[in-house]
Image (cartoon, rainbow, N blue to C red; front, side, top):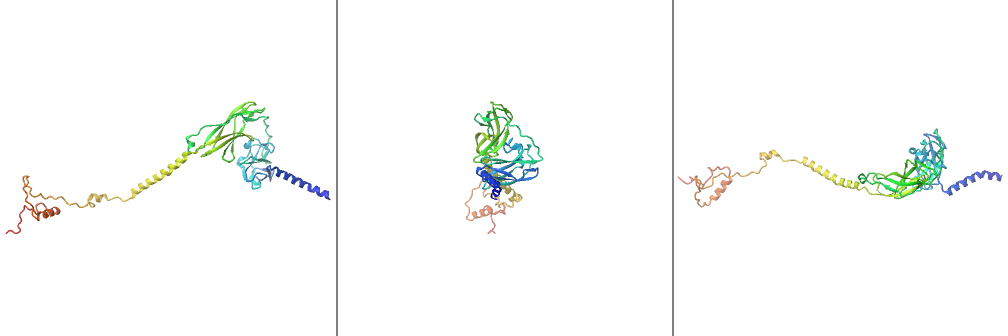
Length: 357
């Protein structure tokens, strides 16, 4: 009876032992809810043993096996239908993802890889029902690339870059084939990292063949996002090995700052001028007709037309007698009264009948 009980508990002990070894090993693991599904279906991907709070990318890749990895890089994966997930505090995750056909034939895997931080990869065998299958391509026997010279960045910025256009350069590196087989059309990955962030990788295929014992100069484009500035690190990776790294200092786009300063000065000035023009148009104007008709003129005393006393007919001037006491007042009154005519105005030379018989 005891022997039978031990035999029943033996599989459970073996399973616990394997799980404990995997946890102690610390390697990431991936399990699938289904081993096979057709296009349009859905599977649940679960993982454990990953770093805590790490962003992962889930992809269905063709022409791949767990032992050989993804042959051809992400070009063999259904990138448009991939999913992203973040691990929890224990390094585990669970994510549903749609089943899509990869661009390469099966054998296929569900490929899980870290996006940030130190790279970690795990693959799980998966079959896409109805998708074609083909044998894996033959590996290149002994083809191995290595950097033989110092890498550099070629190119210069333009006026548009000063105004925020994307900065672009060419990464120039000399590689040599240290293996025994030629390397044809190798696929490189160029990554750009800023500060403490992980590199953002972009694949570039170089057209050509590097024969064994030969070297070749490779130029690959590098481009940053619009408005990017600061210290960047450009990396070159072939396969899983980083071949070279090159620092890149990108200046600040001061043209954008100058544009905003001018905008803050010009726009208020233009608004002010437009406002003043509107005020000038709508404010009341003086009555021009009234001004011409004399209604708004100040009354002015007409000029005295009386002849000055003592003026002779021949043009001479008669000797003047000293004016009487009341003469000055009479002359002043005459000049101030416009309704008197020169003939009717009182004069000291005209005799008066007052007091004569």
